[in-house]
Length: 226
Image (tube, rainbow, N blue to C red; front, side, top):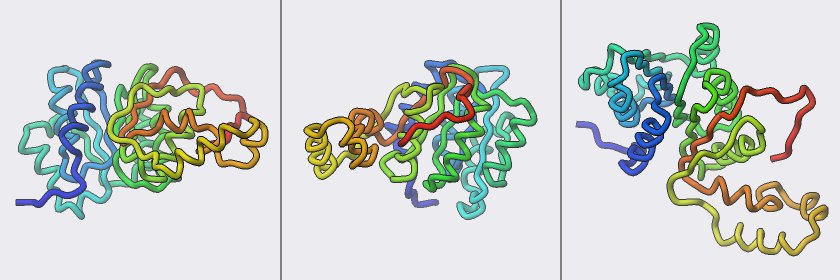
């Protein structure tokens, strides 16, 4: 018996399954295995496709006593699951060299901004046009900051979000005051989270799915504050 903590809740599992069905995903990748709850749901959703494949990355699975791997094996999904114990950046780079193409990516691992950003950099190259990238725990500063950055990029759009938001009364009050300032002054004095409150509202969810609109074709000098 394993007492659960930090597990993916059932409502979020249902959300992920609905996304998989909407895009008929069959080539999926997840960073962060833990108990394997969301992985089991993904495997079950794609199990009917002949060319199904599930890539799973979790260098910390040993700290979970390999319970995620055991659950995958007990469920009979091991034949189409490729599991990696290595750091995600190393694995994703190798998958790019293998010319892997993905339909769906779910990131539920570290909450450190620069590590997550590196993961998204590689996943952007691996995802097909129209594919979905889902960030979990977007109420935590690292993932939230990354969601705001992706919102600025021309090759991504918010597909849908799920879960309760994190906009507290202090941020709402500050945003209301910011609306009274002239645009130029507001941008200079306030952080993007306050000066661009409408976009902040768009990423006010626990779990956010982004859709890849095109390949990354930004100019070499592209920049957007976030």
